[in-house]
Length: 326
Image 1: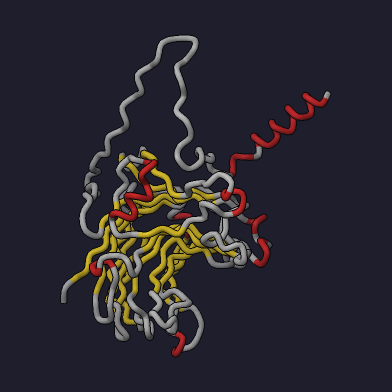
Image 2: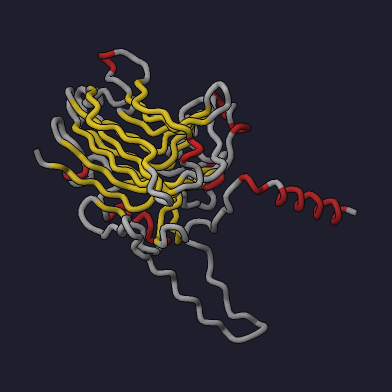
């Protein structure tokens, strides 16, 4: 009888698991299977080969670029080698016993190339392993003060950033923050810079009527007062389950300018275009402004919003950062 009850419980758990991604093996990839006792060893299939897509060529490695190379176990080393850094909850909570790598590489059948999976779990994951922050979760990569100067903007400089991303079909959002891209300041040595809030965010969000939006938000400097400045708001359903190519060009200055193009790769449809929007795009005292990508979301005070969320896997590919002269 006990065995039957256990079987039914396991069956119920499996049948309810359709809302979440399949959890991959712990960090390090687990152990390689040994020989099959029922027969001879089989030669492992060759890994898939990345392909260029018409109109969307594969970005090659170089200064300011980060392209998945298929070496999943070496993902973090690749990120660091290209001048980026990561903030992932790999040792949060139960992961402390068995660290779990939250940024993986997978071969995407639509793009025909290796891409990055950014994973986040509703339960357990927190903000950079800080158990005191019980209202949010973060899994991001970024440039920072250790990155090459060409990947961080100083006042008056222009960066053009290009990448591709795919929000999962059925992605769950709330009325609180969820950012998949940020432009944010680097604090100064004294810790006095105005960098507690981001400058720009890409934020999937649920409205009071239940509809989901993709919002591009500018947050003014503290001296100009609080409040979000919505540069664009589009229907999130146009993005869910679709690869989107992004070109973002920013002149980081008090009299700065912001340009953005989002294009859906499957059909070439331009989902959003902003051209030279004038805004204050600097932060007092900052050591530089830089991009961040991944998933950074609210789970509510003491996790009050967890019931509205699920585990997610957000995909990114082909990062490029270029400093534009003039």
